[in-house]
Image 1 (cartoon, rainbow, N blue to C red):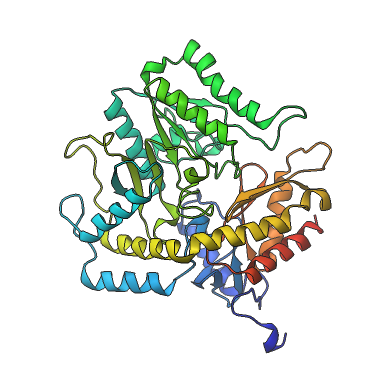
Image 2: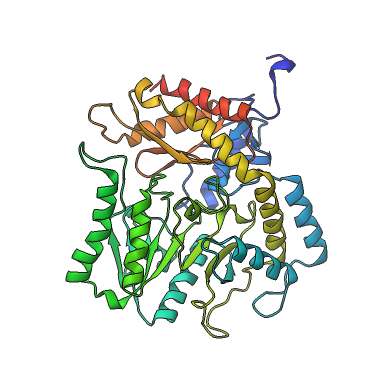
Length: 446
């Protein structure tokens, strides 16, 4: 390959995958790391810049996973790095649960001001999405005096015992860990992409909400004992499913009718991922509580549980976190939000629409593509055995993930048979084009 053909913002592979250094590290990993970790392909990362990852053997990859939708500003964005360095040189930790940090107040003000619904908000900081969900569950119980929850099939809210009790994604995540937190009931999440002919997606969505009231509430779950309904406005791990707007509207009406809190999990779909700051902004629904993590601090551990001010009425000492709201993570988040508001949310909308335009005819061109959907840079591609049966094809999805890796493109699956595209929000049209071209090539090989 000539030097003119090599671009630093696109993949360049120089060894078989994995290379010799990667193989050696993978072997060491097998001896000491938890076997519970999921690794889809043998990538051993050395460093990253923008939307590009380089492995320990010098192979360069285009990252369309963003560290599982975390690296929203790309890897090691100079503005974020500078913010981290400045803060680390001043103060790394004192614990915001016992003392005060000005930057913690500043970030809480920004999050509260950007929250859906323009109502007064208070913010609790944690370290991970699961911690934010745990905090939301505790607050919902405290505020309402009730102890039950409604979650949804396909949901992923985390792996700690409380968040796992809400999770309805994969049996392997729950198997062997019971008993979980009692009082969690799962309802059907509407999937508008796999409906039988003749059934409208809005009707299906309405039926999902009606089933809560007409079946759960009439048979096994007293409505007056339900503290909260916990829902992803767009399902992430469940397969990048975008429900009809009426589903979330009617869910909000149901919650209000029975005095139930509505909690939105925006851990994966928030922070500009969908082309708006919050996924809720696409639906015009105001949750009582919502949670965010992943893209909030460009890779540093930070999460937030953001609640209506009148809901967050628990007393001093009721809930806290030693490291939640760490000043270095907060500095990274403030830099992240500045970049999002200045350019990256708009770029997410623009480049996401460009990618979707290129993917839209795939179900007609490729027999194994069942559906394409997305908002912003949260895009799902469903893999099926054929266009007639639309039978899910998880093995083809996994094969496509591997083929893409072999060509320098990093992607991940979601749900049973969906490819998710969740790149850093900084990607440009050339990088988007490379990703689409590579996936088209891989599809011809299935």
